[in-house]
Each structure stands twice: as C-alpha cells, then as structure tokens.
Image (cartoon, rainbow, N blue to C red):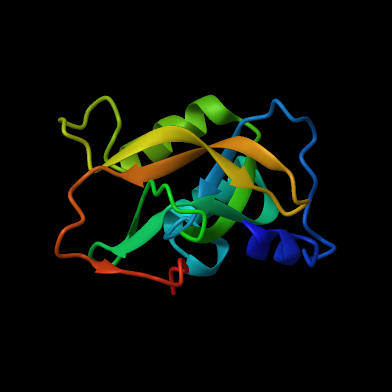
Length: 150
C-alpha cells in the first residue's frame, strides 16, 4: 500500500482528524461520496464528518449506474474513496443499510453487506471502518482497474 501512503501525506489541510480512534468510521467509494451529489450523500453529511480521502484493499466493479466493491488479497488492488466519522451511527447506519439493500426489511441475499475492513486514512494511519461490499457474483461485470468511481 505504498502508493496511498505517499498520497495520504498530501491530504488537504481542511480534512478533519478523527476525534477518537474508537469512533465509528465509514468508508464510501461510490454514490455516497461528496462529488456524487446524491441525496443519500446529503443524508450522510448531516450525521457524519468527512475525514478526507481514504483507501481500501479491494476490487471495484461497475454494476449498473453504481459501483460494487469486493475483497481482494492483492496489495495492488486499491479502491479510492472517503473516510467519514459517524457522529450518530445507529440511526444513520440503519438508513444506509436500507439504501444499500441490506436492511432488516430487505430479503436475502442482500445486494450489499455492511462489514468492517481496514482502511488507510488521510493521516497515513490504518483503522477499521464500515464498508458496503457487493454481495453478488462479479463475473460479466466491468472491472474498474483504477479503483476510482467516476
């Protein structure tokens, strides 16, 4: 993960530091990112604080008009996204679960699964964060080799 370490040192000066390491963190890589201007991003921004760019080991695929991330054992497989500190985790994660198709009202198998994974934060530290991983076969999907959604 040497490439992200170099970039992490160049983080914007306005990126916030986590207030406490045990805080609930969320890694986003698609429609929840700041640049997406999606309504659910606005919901995220109300109850979370942007920490800055972050990286997740994984592979990214184009599902339809949205991406899907899956685990990868390769160090070179990185997904570029954002880290957010969840200020009110419980109600926010419930709403995000419903949006991502893995809420209690969604019939299994779920489209995404919310799991904890290590992510590289803007300050070059690694921390566990929630991430929504795609829970369907990726055969036939276009792989986004750059790891960047749009």
